[in-house]
Length: 463
Ligand code: GLA
Image 1 (cartoon, protein in one colour):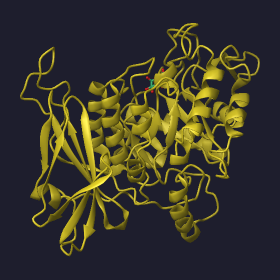
Image 2 (cartoon, rainbow, N blue to C red; image 1 turned 180 degrees about the horizontal axis):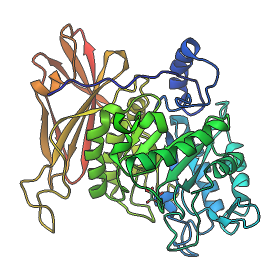
Image 3 (tube, helix red, strand yellow; image 1 turned 90 degrees about the horizontal axis):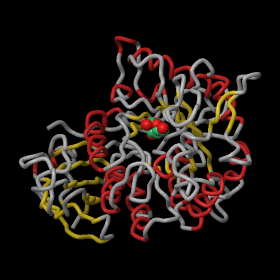
Image 4 (cartoon, protein in one colour; image 1 turned 60 degrees about the vertical axis):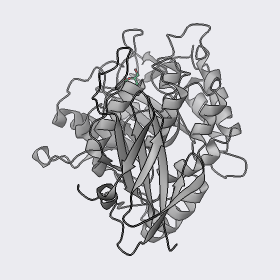
C-alpha cells in the first residue's frame, strides 16, 4: 500500500470570485504572499479548488429535444429561474456560483463573417444578453461577488448533438470562437471533442492547446474545462512533450458521460487511476452531478447523494446538472451539506486515493440482471486535509447494506504522524462526532447498498 500522495501543489494562487467566503479568506492570505500580476497562461490563477455551480447538460440536453412541454423548452427563462433558485436556496452562499450553458445554444455560423450564431429561439436575448443577466446578480446579498457564466463548444467540425440539429464545431475557428464566447461574457468554457479530426494523444493535446492559448490571449481569467473523455489527459507524457492536465486546462474529463450510477461507478474507477495528478490549478473531471430530475440519464436521489459524497472527497467539480426547480428537499439537503463542501474546497487540495478495494462494479451481487456475486462492491477512499486532518469515504455498491472497514493498513496509507495518539471521527451526514479512535486505528462504517456512500472527517485529538 503506497502512502497518499499530496496534490501537485499550486505554483500561483490568485484570489478570485468563485470560492465560498471562508475559502476566499484563506486564499486571500496565500494570494497576498505568492501573487504575481495576472499571468495570461496556465497556471492562470484559477482552480485553486474545484468549480461549483450548475450545468444545463443533464437538465436540458441539447435544448431541442424536450418538446414544448419540457422544462427547457423556453431555455432562457429556465436558466433565469435556475439562477434565481440557486441564489434564493442558499446554494450560491455555499459556493455554487457558476451557471454553465452546455450544448444547444449555438445555431450555426454566419456565412459572411464566420462568427458563431446563437439560437435566438432558445435565447431571445442572445448569449451576451443571457450572460449579462446572470452576471448582474450578486452571488448572495452583500457578497460583493457576481454570478459567473459558462459556455460550451466542440473542438471538432460538429457538436455532439449534430444528429438532432445542424450545429457546427469550432475546428478551424478556435481563436475566433473563444473570443466570441468571452466577449459574450463567459469566464468558463467547456470544449467538447465530438466531430474531432484527431483523437490521438498528441493530436488532441495540440488541438486543445489552441483553445488554451486563445483563452490566455484574451487576457481574462477563463476556466478551461476540457472534455476529451480520456484518462490520459491527466498524466504527463514526456514522449510527446505533454506536461499533464494542469498544463492544458483547469479541469479535464477523464471518462465517458456519467449519466447513471453504473457509468459514474466507472468514472470513479478512472478517478482512482489518475487521482495523484490532481491539485490546485487543475482537476480531473469525473463528470457532472446527476440526479433523478433530468432529461439526460438519471439516478436516484440516494445515488446522487453518494456521488456528491465521493465527488466532495476526490475533490472534483461540483456542477449540479438536474432540474433544481423540480427536485426534492432531500436533493437540496444533499448539495447543501456544508461540511462536505468544505472538504471539496479544502485549500490543501490534496486528492483522495482509493485505499481499499479495486475497481467497483454496479449493479453488484443481487437479482434482476445484476452482475453475479462475487463482484467488487466496496471501496474506502482517504485523503489529507489542511490543519492536519483527514477524511475517509466508504462506497457500497452491493445489493444490500454492508459493513466496510478501514483497518490498520488502510490507516497506514493516510500517513498519520506517529505523534497522533487519537482521532476524533465525525460523520459528515449525521453531522455528529461518532467515535474517538486510539491506536491501532481501525474504523468500520455501516453503509446502505445499491449506491450509497458515507464520509467521515478525522481530527487528531489529545483525548
Ligand atoms: C458529450 C459530453 C457531455 C455533453 C454532451 C453534449 O457527450 O461528454 O458532457 O456536453 O456531449 O452533447
